[in-house]
Length: 197
Image 1 (spheres, one colour):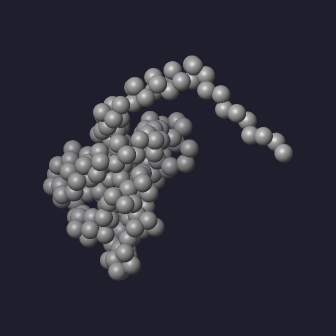
Image 2 (cartoon, one colour; image 1 turned 90 degrees about the vertical axis):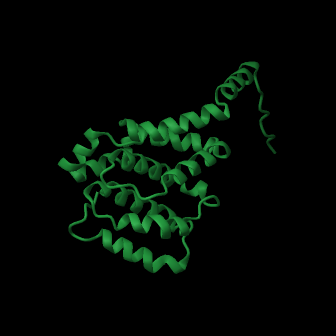
Image 3 (spheres, one colour; image 1 turned 30 degrees about the vertical axis):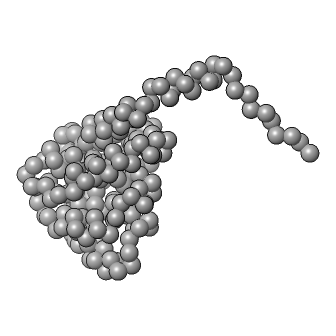
């Protein structure tokens, strides 16, 4: 029988690992996370204009292999990679972000809507890792359902992101009792006048 190969740790490898650990301190990791979500996840005016001009193209730009060629999807990949590696450090950071955006934002306050959209995006990207940390039933019932009811044009961003959150979390953690309310919300998003991006 073949013996397993012995893993040899070189001095250079040890030094490289030590350098990585000295750079990625908990504070540095938290700052990187906040910068990714607060800067790179926030939709720009050019992206909003692209959404208005060609919603289907805008939607297609956010999926598939776009992470290889576009900044935002690349940053999503970086975020997920860092989150998986440093879950213990970043979970409280994401939970704090969710908590601070867990209020209804005035529809005219586009900056806060864009910030909320970015935080919801982060929550969707790491939904599987936040399973035990987020009470999605409460979040859905107390906040997300109410946000879906706001029909102001600026809230299309939030309605879209709530739909993504619902898609991510229903397979993870949503009580069966809330399914009828969930279906009602999703059916509301399918109306002809709703922006389907």
